[in-house]
Image 1 (cartoon, chains in turn green, brown):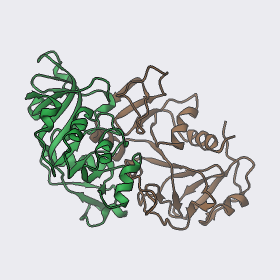
Image 2 (cartoon, each protein chain N blue to C red):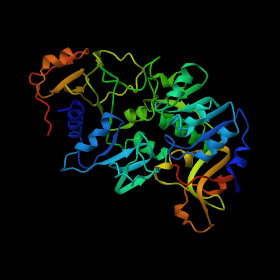
Image 3 (cartoon, each protein chain N blue to C red):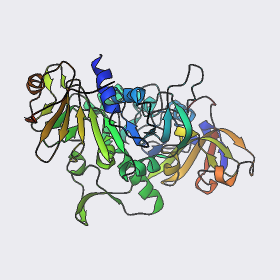
Image 4 (cartoon, rainbow over the protein chains, first blue to last red):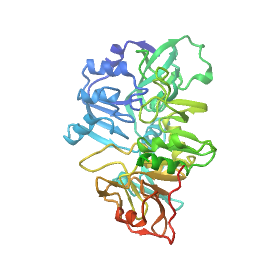
Length: 219
Length: 217
């Protein structure tokens, strides 16, 4: 694990790449990294996350700056800019049920070839997907999903990259840590190795490539 | 009584002691204010919390402790936070007793549509499809009609949330139970007649010989 500035970490990210970004309506999103993605004008991004938050918060800030080409999320209802770009076709949006989306990410991260879920059977969600019947019940085969980068927000890290998340700011973060080639975690503070109890650690440092110390106050 | 308060109060009476309950954003959120005093329920929030408590006093908000609408909440004693995979394991895995959701349409088969209006409004399904698929009991809490348009109709014209039949529909006019036979009118709101409910409902209603008035505190 290496400690970088937000500027340095985002410098590793190219245009036209795929990013998994933690957060639920911006709570648990690495806002300092988002700010730097905007400052460095990273374009043509494919962003995978729970939602597009708000025009001035979380993933929504990348949408407002028109840096996102494709968005894979469960919800865009709190961000009119996303809906506008979707209707104008300048942004491709793939809507996935939240429970299926997180399992697709988990499958990608844990070496599974997909998951079978009853969610979405008989709705538009099943279109162009394989239906598998098992023990008399229909399931949709949802395929794994991975990304080049995972951008995580944690409360604190130690110098080995072990992460602790706060309350409901956890959400997608521990799962995306498994499903990307390069994992960058923004934290509020870095503490000495050994100062966190083993049971306090939610994501092991072996999964984390870079740590950025960001602002204190954001979710 | 305000119609939303009436709906929330009636839905709250469906809750049982010990239930784990997920309330949707908007009207369903009000249900938490009317839980009968003699029972104790735990609220689950899909962003990662069992044991959600009321809005904290001003200045006591924690930006890392929010509901599924990103509004600050508190946690009750015995609460637990977790990641999204675990949250939907609870929801989809059959461990959630009750979910209360808003609705755009419900049809004669008891199927709910509540996540998009093509060409007009595309909020996305969020957790709704998983909630309707996995919760033990699904209650739709909604206004009976919308700007003069029917919402309880023969067959949903909007994209479905799930093919699962919901368990109960509570509106400001009536309580309706979807069954194998169709939509059964179980109760009418205070000062509302059966005829008025039928008039406000495009779907066929099965009307038992006696339809009691909605009992709310």
